[in-house]
Length: 327
Image (cartoon, rainbow, N blue to C red):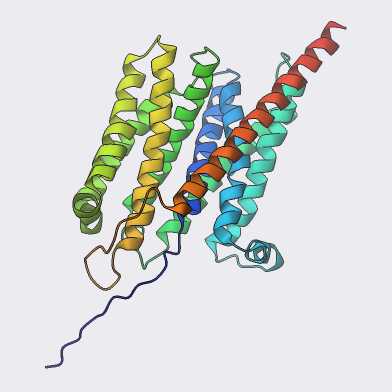
């Protein structure tokens, strides 16, 4: 009767903190884009804050993606070859299309000023919504197909990943609108997506022993504290109760973005630290590591620049359009 011993070995994590930043930024941008499309086409509202968030986060997502790929040649390879069977290949086309369409829509919105939407802008709005769905689908699928990581290769992972992106998009919009003293949009989407996140995460944990092991033994504080409590329950409660308080709505939005970050950090890094040959974790992801701080600082800086650029683009064009109308 032969016996087999499996040995674990040390190796560098493939998905680095830059990947966490990329998935957070692009997911938040896609969530805000869907919120903007819903407000424009169904509520007959402008939702300018959601558009600014969508365009800014989409634009900023390019930096952590390129940093995660390490080499420009890896990025260019997607455009110099054809691989329809690869989810990443499709994503290499969805991402620039999403960034370009949101920036173009921001340009058209600012240039139009206070006038009503034209047919071309309405068509572009629908295209942005379709591309946002493609972004959410490709990012969730890109992680789920990694069979070597059982936590990712599960039915619950893409569901929670998409729901937290919707929460983050709504939360970022609420936070941005609160800075301008506006109630804005996003409250309803944050509450609905947050409640759905709790239900989906609960079912996923009950059905997936690997996730239960990750949450209970490796990262109980990060998973139950930072993600579930601070990042989902608290922002949902604040969003429900803060109907008139702009400040509380802003805090609720920021916590929702933090919750999406906590979920991605815990599952991305935690799944990689689980041994492929044993049901044990070796080491912990260092939140204050050089890689993590570099990714956080670089992504935050790029996001701030993107927010300033997109906001100035829309507002300056709107002022110019208003002057032309008065003339």
